[in-house]
Length: 249
Length: 248
Image 1 (cartoon, each protein chain N blue to C red):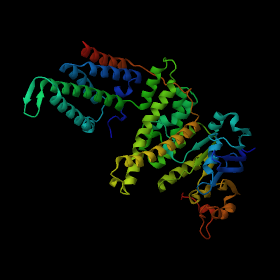
Image 2 (cartoon, one colour):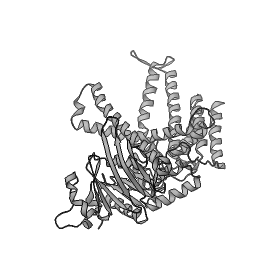
Image 3 (tube, chains in turn brown, orange):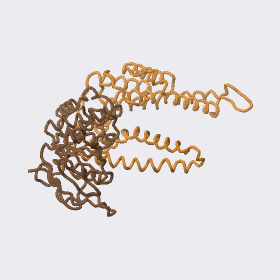
Image 4 (cartoon, rainbow over the protein chains, first blue to last red):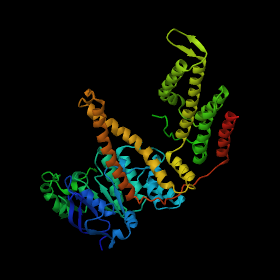
């Protein structure tokens, strides 16, 4: 049984604009899925449906076979969402306080919150910054803090919305390593990006969205050649293989 | 900028219970209001200067950043000196300086200095969340006040102020790079600054709400735990003693 299943998902905005239409997708546990598409193709709207931040106009999202609106809190614990701009995700005055935000919402006892914060910060190698202001961190570190905030919720699935936007080369490498580590530790990864050259080598599957519809889905080696026709830059040069599409050496 | 910002150090004042710190803030503010004679000003000021040193806050840097308030104090002293009726110290055909005016100006300077210093010590040694927790604790017995919501609002407001200031600077720079500063009409200039800032703020608020919801935001949250040590009570007792000294 897939860990995440999207059935006939459609979202129409109040002004009548169709953001996504009839999306069908099954994601297996432990899979690394890259969702690509040009701006306005509905990638972020799709992501916001995965833990119930947006409710569909039609269709449904199933988590472990159960519709997510049956227990929205459980869905938000299972599906962690790392937003495009970490500045909008960070709500704590210090790094540790920000990580504690999620567990405190779940009303965990203070000692347990403290333990989770320690574990989550250690997992992303930010323990030494625990008392620092989040706004003093670099772009890559802020992204790692956003990941730590999500890890504190103990999710099974982590959705990254454009995780490389605005990062310099070391920042991209830092975040990419973190994503791969999370995948290795058993998390299911859904990564939204149009910068395929940075990450595709590590993905099990590539999905392309165009004008709100899912237009291609399959192994990266087979789908990549259709990318350009849907407004995603073809990252492969002549003779190059998908395994070259990474910023890790 | 160091003034009114939390500076992480491991001192007695940094570790002090947030609720007692809030009570101390109130006592010093009241002392500033009741002060009338020179010793009434000197007592709280000397305790507060000792506190700055005890908290290992960068005294000279803070003093430099307080220059702006120095200018305000000077203006108030000068205005009071020239406009307050009373016994003249200096007489000229155009204006005269009164003794009562100078005293009134100096009193204002003393009060402002106490409030400034106590705010500096409290904000420099207390993370905002501890403030939030203390406010939440004080509001808990008040009926019909959703203390968790109020505390979250205070937290988000303080969190967003520097972000909004950055956005404001960015928008202004972007407009100035297109010679926006040449526009003479202040209303139009404000319009071009305020509307983009408002739009950006609303979009950002929307995203923050989404991010908080994604992490299961709830008003039934883990309650903060407070620990009052003997030293905390001792520090509060000093604040109370200063207040009593000024009052009596």
